Image (tube, rainbow, N blue to C red):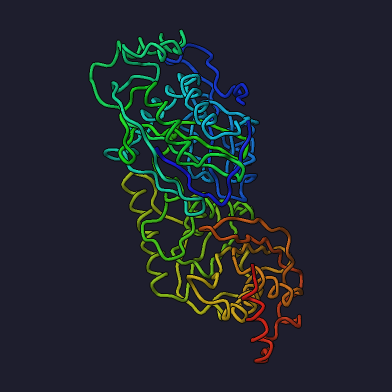
Length: 500
């Protein structure tokens, strides 16, 4: 069974409450009529509210932000299921089988695991499996599904998941209620609705094929008496016994999700096979940002029609590419001092253009790419509306020592090209102390409006929204570069090593 091994954050509780209703059937699901379900989505941590805003804007429903960071939940009807795959801020999607806001775990490990085993046969699986089937049909029609079943790519901003599964056999379109003739106890758990749904599907399933599955447990909290592996193993074993599916940790058809955050428990079925954040990039660099995080940063600065948007440290071009696709009424300039980075950006742009041309869509993108010196940009003063970039953290790229000079120099040059009073900047960095010092030195040119704390590859970083002051460049003390003494540089380096 699959498991989430982040033992640094584990937690417990005691007895099973009734699950929150997350699925409702307006009519019989097998007749092709509408089912209302709850969909869960993982999003870049820190941008949960941004994702909820997008759901409200594009789907027209209110999303609930989970107590577990990086997750939102919202209702949707099956006739609009395709819309969830059009969301730009979500990494992975699932349909919720059942959720418990305050699950009371037993004190002993054995009792808790036994309870999880019993829970598997009592859950309302029917609608969730129907939505999974419908979702697979939608993806096949659009040609999204690859041959076989790929292991879903896990976001590097989320804790690593270790798969788990259990063994058995069934037919291709059979739902969980199918049990072996000898399993009287399992049969006793089958609901009338489940039996009806199963019979209808059996009548239309001429082929016999193994359904393969795995269970993935994502757990956070430090008071649980069990590990993620143990929960996935025991819950998955019960799922196997009840459903009679074949276990496969890599080439699975169905992934059952067991998400446990302190006393919040959500059981779901995955609707995505790999994270949606990989959608734009074909040529990756050492610090390529997820497209979903890029989208969140772009929404933070609210691009308007005809805005000139600059990414002076574009890397592989993830930010301007996402902007050119989603906010196409603005124009993007992507630049970097590294020739390899510029080449990757050009290749990624060509990849998107070719993909569009193959689909018969207009292939042009409002984006240009340049190689330049960051401290001396070939851009006219006060001509850029928005600057948005991923600054070097000083880990994989650059160094903390160099950042002490780089950051003030960057902010000064950014202030020169940005429009006074109306210009904005959205800057991502994990080097928080160095950035705070640079902003304090550039106080006459930039004003900090808001900070979003995010998880980038396991690093705690900040996305800073800055507003350009009305000061005309050339009339502020910050415009003059002040050389720093050796003693100051050494002191800053010592302070930097103490940064949490």
